[in-house]
Amino acid sequence: MEISKPHAALLSGPGMGHLIPVLELGKRLVNLHNFSVTIFIASYTSASKSQVLRSTMNPQLCDIIELPPVDISGRLHHDAKIFTKISVMMRETKPLLRSAISAMKQPPTVLIVDLFSTEALEIAEELGIPKYVFMATNAWFLSLTIYVPTLDKVVKGEYVDQTEPFQIPGCKSLKPEEVVDPMLDRSNQQYSEYLRIGMEFPKGDGILVNTWEDLQPTTLAALRDEMLLGGFANNLPIYPIGPLTRPVGSSISKDQQLFTWLAKQPSESVIFASFGSGGTLSYEQTTEVAWGLELSKQRFIWIVRAPTVTNRDSAFFTSGNSGDDPSNYLPEGFIGRTHEVGMIVPLWAPQVDILSHSSVGGFLTHCGWNSILESITNGVPMIAWPLYAEQKMNATLLTEELGVAVRPDTLPSKKVVEREEIAKMVRMIMIDEQGFGIRAKVKELKQSAEKALSDAGSSHHALSKLAESCCCVNQGA
Image (cartoon, rainbow, N blue to C red; front, side, top):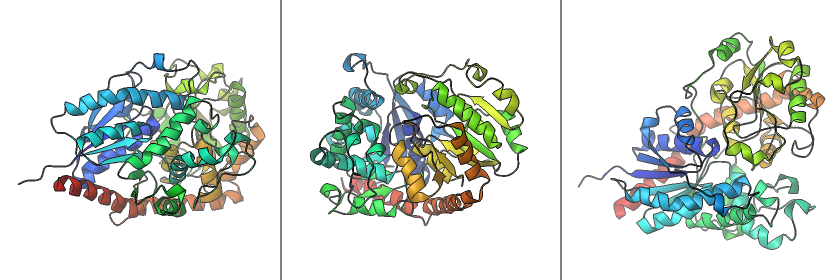
């Protein structure tokens, strides 16, 4: 009897931080392991599918199904945080996912869900198929997430009010000022949602994580040690399958003027500044960044968004105003003074194509994990500028453990970083001697990432083990 092709169902929450790695995982399962793949996208608005298709090359490799938007307005407090919004949305999407899977001509033989979708693991349980959680970020954040139920029992009071770092067994300790957004207020719903997710991870048959063995060997070893992390491991397989990033040339739309300008610049002479698809700065901080870039006297590309003094969560569920004119909010005369050495791009640009260009030599980034991986895999050193989510942890990982970035003396979330410090950081990674070691280290990690993804590499092997495990279970059934 001929064995049918294994069929993986992947579930992603909204936002490019979730969608990009899920799409790349789907493509690798198709291309390397002969899976058929259906990707279910939970949507908050009707715009997300076009963003997905624009951000991936050859989307026809996977069947992409956008689940209908759900109305969660009646289930949220008026000041609900972004983590709560996504968690509630994924909960309300679960019946839609169950119906969509039931209607499939070829039912899935494995279900892989992202961080916010752990409640959907019960659907795989009902179907009697293997089920996995995909942590699209790094192993340190994974360790915190599965250890937070233990911290909840032993830490008294607010995490941010503690005076000593939190010990995560076998891993780097976590300073109180580095805690992820859901841990900022234990009375807020986003904390209870995060706590629930940490407790639901062990319900899967394994965890996929978007990192690789040589990048975080100590943390991965701790995750696999049954004596650490509150006995979490319990022989639950951990699959480091990264780095999963957008391929160069994957964007349909390109700014020819931008790339024509880039082609004229010397090698590694341009600093690229972008704060992500959901990142906005205050008017005062935007002004200081502008002056910092100008004072550095370095070539730059800056993806700018209109400044805001409102809740930063709003950027995640609204699209930017394409009619915004940067001259309305940048310092007077800035665009004119810098037009020969800088490019101002409103709202969006093909980030991976910019980072891969030989003229780009530095990246001022909000420290989203996708952006970090895109920078590392192109050998570009970073200025770490964390804004939200787990980005403060990511900034610490980049600067203190991996040594591929510099960062401001004080967190940007605590005070405005002034122009002189910004100019100093830009010059450090672009031209100053103390930045040479950072540049050399990130190029080493680029080679390490390439090795991990090669046919003989650790990440290729980890994904092969996952595929083999899924196939064995289904054949046995």
